Image (cartoon, rainbow, N blue to C red):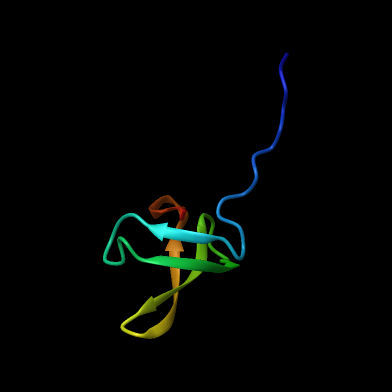
Length: 65
């Protein structure tokens, strides 16, 4: 049986994600908005005690547990 289901978009607004590559590797943040650029999202991470809004490529993100 061949089912054609569209996968849920990753990442979704409000989803917790972990950065897996680059200078913020290991940080966990929350997706706050889709970006105008394809395959990019705005992620808020806690960095030195401050919330920072960063634009990130979805290829360096994974769902946080």
